[in-house]
Image (cartoon, rainbow, N blue to C red; front, side, top):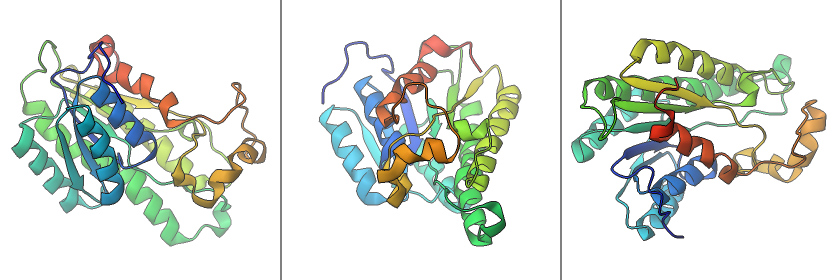
Length: 250
């Protein structure tokens, strides 16, 4: 693993939730390659440490925090620890989330509905709220007119409802609405944007991971590139939204 000479995120402090695997891990490593210092917040300490080991090989600072983003106390403690350590967060990436697939709405257990909403939507809300409060008060980023950036991970399922994924779709639609509303509230000091990946091969799919190629036809999804995406396919967009190139986009 090597650093990139472009160093597009030099002098940036980045907080990424759910960075112990999948898309969050790929974004964390790519940000470190671009010379960012990274805070890895994840409920899974083992996965978080694996990500941290790679980042430390790149000679970037890295802080690992065990956090349940659905719990307000956890998120507030995380935020306070990050600001005690780094005194700021330049970029917040709300990536933590879980997938729900296979259950029709009429058979969806209430406990599963509550869990998906708590992690995907409430987690994005809590992190945006408590980090956003401090981000609004901090000084501008070095070489920028902005005080910070927030990047939310939504999904194509936040743009179109897919059968057998009702609550997952609901949370991802909700994240887009939250993103659009918050962007208006915190402009021009902070930009808020969302990334909407399609079907990405990660361990979040659990037993369904080996059958991802069947899902598009089952859910009537057309993938024009004729392949399942990888976490690394998402990192260029994340880099763009974190970099000065997107300072006028919110």
